[in-house]
Image (cartoon, rainbow, N blue to C red; front, side, top):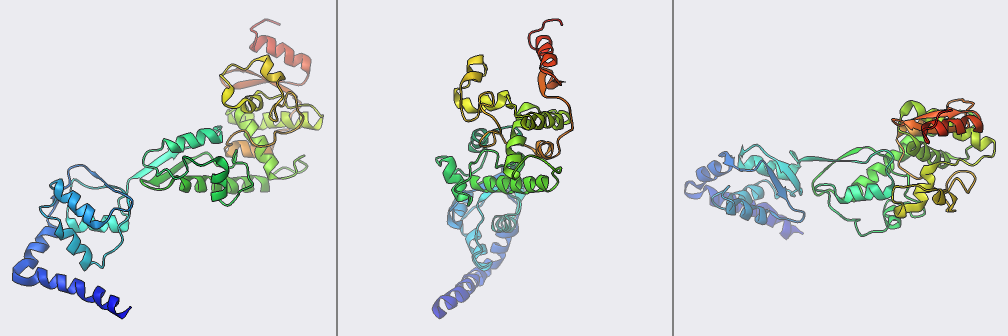
Length: 336
């Protein structure tokens, strides 16, 4: 250990002495402080790349006349660890400034990926696979393996990740985004559950998450979400099936071609709320905060039915007779 310490102590001194000899110090000072033309304003430091490789790249591309200046400068600075990533530079910058950036991480390019409210987990995975500069560590993993890596091996992934825009640096691992989104959803869900209205027929926050995911898929018109939640609670209280199309579509999975038919409504799956009572076994989407709050603070309404009437909005009805009239008007295009 003493020998290694002495080596680390004296090698930089020897290098410095060599540089100083014969007036070399003046050349070295000029080499590391003179503004250099980096051409492109971005520079990618590959994961696992060392200073020798970077020095050669700078020389080969004509930025520096020789590769040793950067290496000596690094040794004099204590051989700081290089941080991989994509960096944004001014067109002209000194070698000393360049080294400072790649060892501190300052100036890394900020990249972002947006997870959209209402997406399902499969769509989220696809977005992260295609995210620019995101290092793919989970692309070949199963959903279960991702949840295991997050520390929740028995948890179904659907609905567990908060839809938002996430910032990262090039070469960050995709698991970083999964963890951020997972932690944020747990925080948002806990916040919503703590503000729930009294007397809700829900056993736990997971059931609130399920209901929020259904509300999210039914409408993204924010002022309608509490009303739709109220309709669902009315139906549950009366022992009625929820009969909501998005749950049927989710149960069909990738087999769904975009055209929902009567046969689909009649085909039983664990997610078909036309054939089964109660909530679905898991969430069906990634709900945002508005849907979470609607699920725990529903609007008091006398409606038991709703039908889409265009532009994302719905017509609400108290009775089946009223509902059928609304269906004829808004879906079938027939007069009363």
